[in-house]
Structure formats: C-alpha cells, structure tokens
Image (tube, rainbow over all chains, first blue to last red; front, side, top):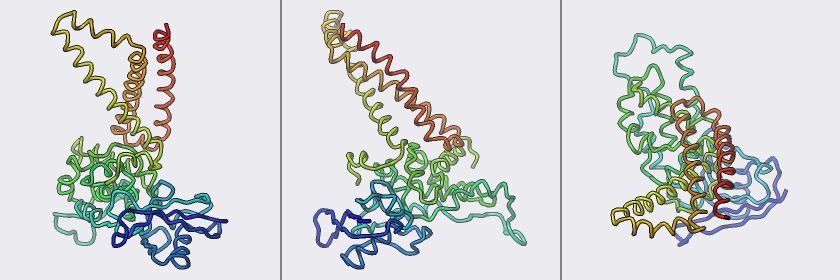
Length: 232
Length: 124
C-alpha cells in the first residue's frame, strides 16, 4: 500500500515554528507505524527524531499522537490507520526535537508518589505474604509502562501542568492497594490536593489512550473513594 | 501549553466530547445566571424599570436562546448524574461508554419535545 506520513517537525535550533513534513512511500499493510517511521529515518530523512527502544510495546518509548489519538507507534498497524497518517509529538510536554518530548517533569511526578513498597514495621523473618485476593486488588495497575500516553491525553493536564497526572496516580494505586505497603500517608500528601486526584474530571481519555488497556480512570476513582472514606 | 482550540482536535473517546459539552453547558448556564442576577436586581428600582426590561425576554432571539438554556441545564444535569454515579461507584466505569451514550439518549428524548413545545410559542 502507498502511505503518506504527515509528521509535525520542529528543530528548536533551526525552526521558529513547527512545520509539517510529508513522506510518501510504499509499505506493507501489516507493517507497524514504527516500521514506517524507521523507513523515513533510514531512507528518506535521517534528521527525523523520535524515541524507540524495544519496539514490542513493553518499553513505552514511542508514544506519540497518531491520527489525533495517543498510541504506541510499535503497537499500531498501517492497515488500521489509513493511507494518510498524521503524527505529532505527545501534547503538554516540551518538544526537544520532532517527536521527542521532554519527560523529566512527567517522571518527577511519578517519583513524587513514591512508587515503591514503603514499610515502617520490622522486616519479617522470611517474606511479606499476600493472599491472591489482595494481590488481585492492584493487578490492573501493575501493567503501566510509563509511556506517558494517558497523562498527555488528559485535558486536565493540558490546562494545568502541575496536575500530578493519571500515570503517577496509577502507580500510586499500585502501592496504595498493596496489603504489604505502609506508605499511604506519604502518598496522600501528593494525591489529596487540588493538583492530585481531585483534578481528574473522569474524561476517560487516559483509558482510551493506554496501550496496556489499564482502566486508568477506575484506578483514579478508587483512590478518590478511598480518600473520601478515609480508607488509606 | 495546549491552545484552547486544540482541545477540539484531540480524538478522544465519547468521554472527551461529553466533557467538552459539559463545560460549554456549564459556562453557558453561568453566563445566563449573571444576566439573570442583574435583571432581578433591577426590581430595586421599582416596577417601571423592571417591566421595561421585559421586552428583552419577549424578543424571539431571546426566547430561542431560552431553548438553548433549557438544553444546557438539562444536559449538564443528566451528565452530572452520570459523573456522580461513576465517582461513587468506580466499578461502573467498565460501562462508561454505555453510560455516556445513555446520557445522550435521555437528553435527546427529553430535550426534543421540550424544544418543540417552547419554540411553538416563539412562532405564535
């Protein structure tokens, strides 16, 4: 099939404004969009810049706005995108170059919720046990790969860059609902604020964008409810 | 930062559009309330001043605007109930698309006959 990639390009060292680059070439319908981007970079324009690493939907490097929605370039096939494909960098983050965005602020918010097991009680002799039922409570939120597609697709985040964002809340949920964790109070200082979970307007763009099919809004809703009824 | 018009160009799900409509309806109702507070306050200047303003409410354009106002209040209320439901019962989020479509159906079912009824007075 013939495809045309319309890519939003921007090099802050050369360009005053972003511009659209168009690249036409033949590709297989079963190619992934990442394959098409690689084709552009390797054969048509070596200056095109984007992140990629594992290319199998695990590392979360190649999240971008594809035909208006946030997706992983390695998880969408050309045949599902049509012949003219519009690609833009993730919204709400500073563009470093082309499709490469600055994720520092995103990762700082992720770190702010202490996304690791926090304990205050002495370590048990062997290990901290957990029942399968308790493990099930946070199963969905263990799947996050920190691609940033959810946070960048959230209108609350577009309006307020200080919002901690869906990705950080998902990762907080993973530990808040872990029966072995004792760091709930610390995380609440970040989450129980105007720029914490209460900034969420249940728009569900995060759910639509998540390449791991995490029910992000539900996770945020569970944290809100736990806060409301003081269950943490 | 993201520009206002870019809120419309992102292709989110039905939740995205329902949020935009909820915002527009909310801002619309708020603006009407501001006008309403001013016109009610005019009663302080006596019935003559107050009655003088009533021509505004009888104007066809304003009466058509009232239909939109009823639509905005109706949509904001029904969608607000959906948001309350999913906020208090997060397990209902599995049905979020269906709930959003249900809001649309209920809104159309209530608004269309109301609008026809209200507009019949404008035409008269």
